[in-house]
Every structure is written in structure tokens, then in C-alpha cells.
Amino acid sequence: MIMNKYTTNRLVTTSTLCIGVLVAFTLLLSGCKKMLDVDSSRIVGEKYMWNSLEDTRAALMGTYGLMRAALADHNAHWLYGDVRAGEFASPNRQDLRAIIANDLTASYPSLEALSNWRRWYAVINSANIFLERVPEVREKDLRYSVNNMTVDIAQIRFLRAFAYFYMVRIWGDVPLIISSHDGSFENKPRENQDKVLAWAEQEMLAAALDLPYRYSASDEQQQGDYYNEDSGRWDGALARKLTAYAVLAHLAAWQGNYPDAANYSKFVLDDYARAGMGYISTGHLTDANGFFFNKKTNQLFGFAFDWGHVDASFTGHIEELTLAEPVVNKQIPDIYLPKDSIITIFNEAGDERFALDTLGTPVSERYFSNYNGKYPIFSKIKCIMGGVNDPSFRIFTSAIVFTRLEDITLLRAEALAVLGERQGAINLLNEIRTRRGLDPYNEDINGDLINTIFLERQRELMGEGHRWYDLVRYNRIRPSHPMIGQLITNGGILWPVSRALLTQNDQLTQNAYWQ
Image (tube, rainbow, N blue to C red; front, side, top):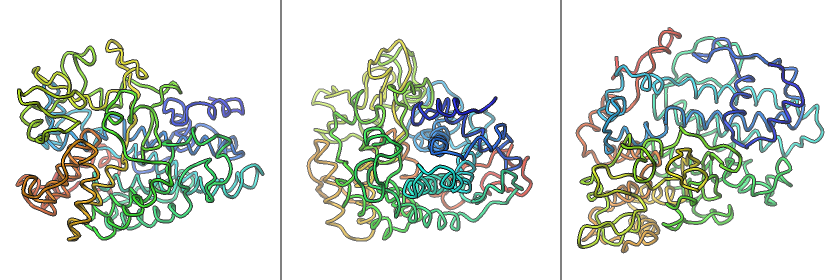
């Protein structure tokens, strides 16, 4: 393949996060000879790159595309975060049943792929090369301002740090690589996860200082129209200041550092209006053209599959796992939530997400369709064919949303409850409950406050990749699930390291639980 100016311009004018083109483009840039397990793919000469503002935009968007691919590949985000929690059932896929049963070394190609971190190091390698080469563009192209470069670097540093945080939650100790070494890496051992998280936290904090609240919106930290596009192009598409603090809150909570989790989440809740954000109505959350459709400002950190940019796909969406008849023409869903679980979770009358009337009939189908069928269909997220919702053509456009305002509100409620700031936690809990048609929290009716907060997180964030990590945090606070408690004690909450990685790199060791 020959990369010329025409090719570069075509790439720049495609979808902001189009994996089909920009990921391939970035992979050409980010190949390396021996980086743990990422095979060499340095095909295009570097002399064709890092010359102009168009090159930096393409490389930046390519890194976002690689991140989205890491989350979407094999539906990883939901298999790690929702399926492993064991609450969904799978009627016909043995690999998913293995994940539900915590049999993570079972011999299925999907499990081997999920145990392999190569797609995350593709993100990291792309970020490392960007940080090393981007100053060259500043020297060669006067259009590339210092401010533009500063904001680009902040995003890349955040994305790289986020990749490490995400990997630590899955594998624990991981190799920490923060330099490309010109694309030639020697094998490295795994670094202690506490060191990795400490580094990631400092990187995110540094990035947050330079990130704007919004792009192309007269923010003092991002001047003018970002890459000559207005705010509508970037809202919900790029990492922002509040994105960094929201992920920092998650990082701190995962470590059990609830004082910092409370502080980071407070920053988000104090300033969300400045970022053009607000809470989401129930209807807008679950409507086919609502919150998860394409990109939205309220997606505090998300990765869009924008229908308008020809960016939809058949795979890499939760709909691929959850939807079936009567929503789409698929007989059996890959995963479903049994009715007994549904009525246990949604146990309060008036819940706009799901509730039963006095005759046991669903009041709405916002979260579940076909409730009285053999397989209730989890249809909270159902962005089909650009909002047309043609059940005969299963092409999806829902965004992968890592966090949103409601998530951070409940995460701060969790932190305050653990810290003993009871009234503050109740106030935040009620922000969500009342917006979903529920009465304010009453201990005599709803029970223990921490339990109620985690139950509300389960209801509000179902299908968004949080549940497994919530269960781990909850059982660290309140040991109550014998199996999860044992997994926490013995290191079984982590995934095994891929056999292919262990073969390729003799400095890697398997997680003790899976040896």
C-alpha cells in the first residue's frame, strides 16, 4: 500500500471514529517488531507521516478507533462487565456459559481472545508513537498551533492511561510500556498493578489540566474551532476534562480509595452544566433514537458508531448478544435475564424502567420485551439500522458508553455512604430514584443504604458493562457472596493471561489463580 497526500486527506474526512479505515491507518503507524505480542505491521514509511495538521488529526482519531476496537472486539466490554457477573443466562452459547461459570480457561476461541491483551497494547503503542512524533508536526506545519498540540497530547495521555486502568481491572499486573523505542520492543515482565494505577492516575490528572470542558465552544483551554469543526462534531466524541475526572473516580473506587473517589466525582457533579450536560429522562435513555444512538454530549465517555458517518456494524454491540424476536429476527438471544431475576431487581412499583402492575403485567417495555415469553428480551439498548428499527436487518449504531452522569452520581453516593456521609449519599441516590419514578429512599422500606445504592446502580446501569466491577467493590465493602469473596481472596477476579502471550514472552507469568 502506498500512502500519499490523497489517501491521507480521504482518511481525515471519514467518520471521526471509523474503525474500518482509521484503525487500519493507525495500525500501519503503530506496528512494532517485538512488543510483547503485537506483531510487526510497519508497512508505511514514517516519512509520509507527521508532516501536517491533517496527519495529527488522523493519528489522534486512529487511537480513538483502536480504543473502540479494543472494547468492541468479541463484545469484550459486555462479556467482561455484564456476562461474567453471572446474572444473565445463555441458552445456546457454551463459551458464554463458561464465562458465567467463571471457567475462563475453557477451550473456546472467544475466551482465548478475551484473555489476550494485544488489542490494548495496540492502543498504547499508537499513543506512545503519537507523543514521540507529534512535536515534529509543530515544527513543519505552522497551522498546527501550540494550543492544538497541547489538547491533542492531553487526549492521548488520557487514552493511554485509561487503557492501563481498564487492563488492570481485568488482569491485575501488566507490563508498563510508555515509550515506543522506535517500534522495536524487548519483552517485558508484568509490573505491579498498584504502580500501574498510580502512574495512570497521575497521567489522567495531568491530562485533565489541559483538557477542555467542551471542544469548539470558546473554552479557554481549547481555542477556536477544533480542527476547523464546530462543537456538534465533537460533543460526545472526544475525552474532555470531566471525562478524566469521571474515570479517576472509578479508578479510586476500584482501589477502595473512597476519599479520592468522592473528590473526583464531586468535580464532575459540580461542573457538568458547564460541559453542556444534564441528567437523562427515562424515555430518552431507552428510546431507539435516544441516549445510546450515535454520539451525545451526555455520554461522559463513549465511543460512537455513528449511522450518519456510515459507521454502523453488525457486531461489537450489546444488541448482538441480547436482542431476539420480537425486536429482531433472531429466534433466541445469546444472553437473557431470567424472569425471577427481573422481578427481584425491579422490585418497586412505579419504576419507569420496568415494573409490573397488580396483575403481573409489565407497565412498559423500556428495559424488557417479551417478558412473558420463554426468553425475556433485554431491549434497553436497541439502536437498529440508524433508528429505523427494521427487525429484518440487524445492523446496530449504539455507542459504547463507559460512563455517564447518572453513573458518577451513584458512584459518589457509594463513596459518601462508605465514608459515613449518610445524608449526602441519600441526596445523590434520590437524584436518580426520583428521575426514574421511584419514591425517595426510606430505610424502613428500602433497607440498608449501601445495599440500596448498589441495587440502584444495577438497575440504572444494566447492560453498560459495570456489574462485575460493582459486585467486586460491593463484596470488598460488604462480604456477602461466598464465591466472589473467595475469588477476591485468591485472585480469581482477574482473567487468565492468554496462552499465546505466555508462549511469546517468557518473562510473563500466569495469574496465580489460573496456574
